[in-house]
Length: 525
Image (tube, rainbow, N blue to C red; front, side, top):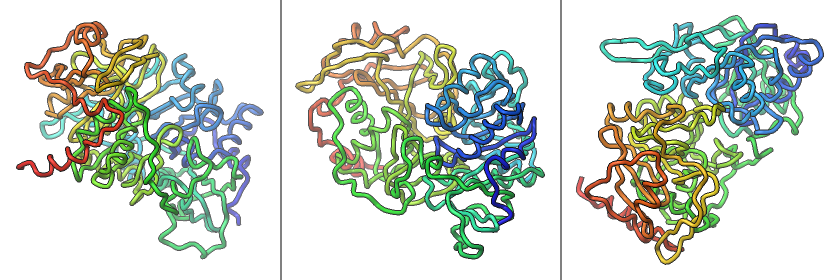
């Protein structure tokens, strides 16, 4: 029982200037009790101060939980992570220059824990080349007070790579479901495995400490050894949390299906409304190939899974999430990162190994801004940083990328009837711009690697060809000059083989995806 301590005692062990690592996504894996205790101690005493806070995935619930507890002047001096959008107060402090801040890709950070644990010098990868992570662009630096380069361009055997250096980890804060008296920790009720094991190894091998928060305490020897995700030899202290501070995701306290404990019926998938999101999802689903492995981003791309299920082809593809679920149906919204009826769970850093080596056949991601060169921005808007998350890791290494999103933003209203679409009200902001605010996806890099890239909207489809956007399809009912070119800051090339988008996807009921699958499967080659 010596390992079990209070959250306040755990917080007291964190020294000023320590580097603190966390393994979480949303509220999955996030030790909320420990975070509350750190905040209380700081507000009462001014300690711990000047922490370097490092995490791979976006953490928080957009409200009060997660790293919001750390958003006090002086508590954090350096922030290194992939996403801050789920913790708006932290994002504001980044924008205001409240501390030094770097954005590094989600996969890079999750894999970097292993390099640190093994005392290797760092991670060498192509992830981030020619994006805002590249030091020749922005180096991932997010404000004026951040001047040091954490990323280097290196030449290795005639190829260009990025090098992310290892650093010391003083404290790892992780979370599981149950720990025994020796500290052996399971994650049975968690919605993702994340990277708690390599993070714990990194902290211990740096001479640091590991604090694990769990819901339940078990008698020593009562846990099945194969159920133990982090062995007790790596865990210094265990904190017990109450259910109110142990959420499975940012939106759900607990769903046994997210933990893989039960399989839920998916026969009755709620039908999507006939609007621009459904049109985009249907057209995007036409790019699916039987047997393909797919990653779906948050937002509009989530509709691809719903369309595939409704059209009866959901069992012919494998959907995955970057945090480590394989198979099933990825959840969306505040439950992003969770999956219903997953076939397997793997650790986040392992999933990114697979992704980085070309394991993804297709990736469907959103696009907030697109420019004439095919660059995409999803990470920074009007000077406010959100972050890249796993976007860069996924888009740079997938065999094929399909960007999905409405043509304009902020109030777009359409009407779909009789196999045609009409624009009733344009969005307030143009999304196809001369220059993106930040390069989260590099069109130049995609062109260099000959990666097929498609941009699908409710009214038009574009392809990236020879480093430029080309208009290839136009929706029925759309005027090219008025509804497309006039709503862009640049005029793209037009394909000589310009064709209409499939009329069937503009009907209340489609029913054509299964036939499209059959046709692709029977095609020669």
